[in-house]
Structures are given as structure tokens and as C-alpha cells.
Image (tube, rainbow over all chains, first blue to last red; front, side, top):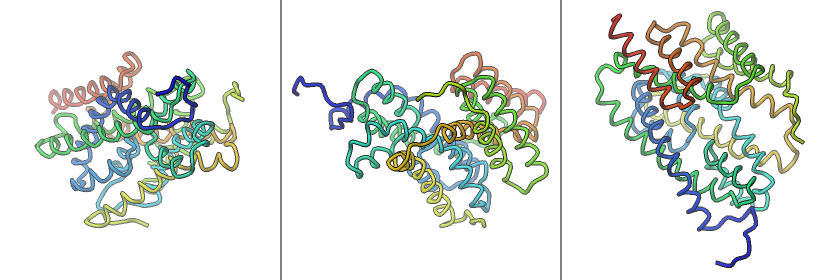
Length: 238
Length: 104
């Protein structure tokens, strides 16, 4: 290796492998969440092949839990699409923040790397860029580590879940709700966000009561989003 | 429009989910290569991504049994105090199991 510093947008085998190793500790936690998903999916009545396929192709925990909530003998397509989009829309922001570096890659590589973007590897790559280090290896290699352990966890949860007789008495039907709630509370909190959440909760409950089935998710998400767009944070980061 | 989840239908549902999720992963970079995403749109997305989870959980608290309610309350409190999702989720599940064991 030469001693010349790598450009920040660099992406080579060594950087990808380093990224994989750096995300391994967090990946162990991802395994546990995968177990929770595998368990919840078994309870929701999904076949084993569907559960593994969903984790492999969707690879986005919160939206997979939300899909279980909408799962039945039939699934309403439009509410499902809007729910998945609303939960995963934060990926759009990740792409936008990575753009200054990723734009230097040829399109195939650029979009290839983005296929594996997720909360943890994105956050670590942004930290690397801010320290003046190459970060795209973290997105790709780290993303692969997260994906691998998400699959292992899903498989474990599935195997474990089908062996449990009465999941409800063990509180396991609450895995989904508690997971989603912890994701909400774990995010950024301030007065503005809390009021947005309260509006989302109230509009969701009203829609749940008075509007057709499954519309409450969309109504709550849009109500919160619109309030956020109208009542913007003061500190412009330009 | 709805899809039956038996057999091939489940695969169709998962494909749709994968497509939507992939669009969010690639869309940010794609849009930015034409026009920068405005501050207002970023604020909308930021507010919406938390709100959708709140909108999913709220009816569970309203319609659920005492075990479900205490599970969510426990997760909320533990998450605020300890700030560790796995601890908060485990505590919530344990709370539901305990309440159901005691009350039946």
C-alpha cells in the first residue's frame, strides 16, 4: 500500500473488509432483532420461506414488523406500500447525505453500494467522512455484515418461534409493538418532535375508529409529516 | 386492491415491499443527481418516519389488554431511562408475561 492518503470516495477490497469488521459488534445486536422478527413473523402466520425471503430482500426491520401488523389472509396493497415507503423514507435522506462522496463512483457501483444502506452503516460512514476518512467501505462491507446477521437472527427466531406453544402467555405477541415503540423513543427527541408524535397518535386513533381498515397508519404518518413540513426546525444547515 | 397471502401471493407481497424499499435506498442519490432535496422535504420525511411508527403503535395501546398496555408503558419508560432498545423491549415483554400470569 502506498502512503498517499486515499480520496474520501475511495472504495476497494480492503476498505470493504474493514467496513465489514467495524460493523460486526453492532451486527450481534442486529441478530437479536432478527430473532425478534423471526418470532413475530412465525406468530403472524408467515411460511418459513416467506420469512427468510422478506428478511433477505427487504432488509429493513421496522418496515418488516409493520408488514406483519398488516398481514392477514389478504394484504391490502396500497396501505402496505405507503406504510413501507413512509417507514423507509429515511433512506432517501441517507442517499442525499452520502451524495457528495458517492457521486464520484460510476452509476453501477453507486447504486450497488446504496442497495445495502441501513441506519447503522450509514451513521458510521458519515462519522468517518466527518473525520476525513474514506467511508463508502463502511456502507458496503458494513451493510453486508448487517444483512448477514439479520438473516442469521431471522432464521434462529423462526426455528425457535415454531417450537413455542403459547407465545401470548410469554408476552411474545408484544415483540412487534415494543420494538417499534423503542425505535420511536430512540430517535431524536425535542418539543417539536413530541408534538408531531402526539398529532400522529391522535389522528391514527381517530382514523382507526372512524375510517376504513388500515388507513390509520397512512393518516397518522401524513398528519405528522405535514406538521413537520409546516413547522420546520429553525437551524438551517446550509 | 388486496392480495391473498396463500402460496404465490406471499411472494408477490414481499416483492412489492422489496421494490418500495429499494426505491427509497436508491431514490435519494437518484434525485440528488438532478436537483438537491429541499429543506422542507427533508423536514417532512424526518417527521413522517417517526410518525408512521407512532401511528402503528397507538391502536395497540388503545385496543390491547392490560398486559399489552403495561408492556408498551414499560418499554417507553425503560427506553427513556436506559436508552437501550434491547433492554427496553425485553422489559416490555416481561411485563406483559407477568401481568398475564398474575391476572390470567
